Image 1: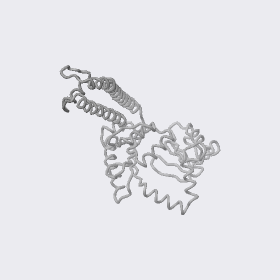
Image 2: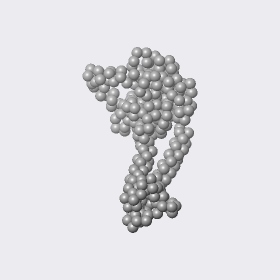
Image 3: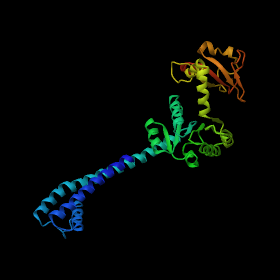
Length: 331
């Protein structure tokens, strides 16, 4: 819309310059006052030509011919371009909005990311690389344009509003991530989301201020993370345990070459169901290490023993290459 506005303003300035030129020209060549000169200019440019005022001086007639050839032609051209630009822009916006509504209606088990700031951008980038379905809610028009360029699903609006979250598919979503700039906004978003979908998994950003984590938890957030606390710990560990941090960073990259940590959920009909880790031969078949198991009741088993049994709805925390992990997920 900014480009359309610029074109309209540019055209209006040129038209104003033509009107000023015509008015001054008629005052000079026809020896008439300002209002009559402006009147003659306008009826000439609009091709109305009432006939009540016509140029009588030779210089005035020549000037009128040039004004008609140049000015009237430009007015018609400008009118055409403005109409074309406005219509095309309006149609593009309408068609784009309808297309986005259809795309959002198809989303299911997706994630809703509220806020496209510095943290939101990183989350979206990683979700996109991991091929996770998500939609971004952002209120800043400039950021919306960047989201569109990235090809992400987007909604312009306030994420704490019911209708905006409903449009984002809150009732079909798997999770919501609230990472707007203030704790109060994240609390409002969390409260609204929890009210609309009691079962959705909510992760909220905390500034680290005293009481902020408690308030977000009370509002309904399942997980609360303070980027400042994590950043401080990361910097401290980079000095105290640099090799450990290097290893963890390597496992967090999403690509085909590096090792990565991933979650593998055991289904009700999984081939591994009921077997022990030793019997499953996960290490031998897939060259994958099981470094943890999260039970359905929330119990976390770190470095599970070979005789640990794999149960339905267990979540295996595994370490391996992407292709190997995908092969494991298939069984």
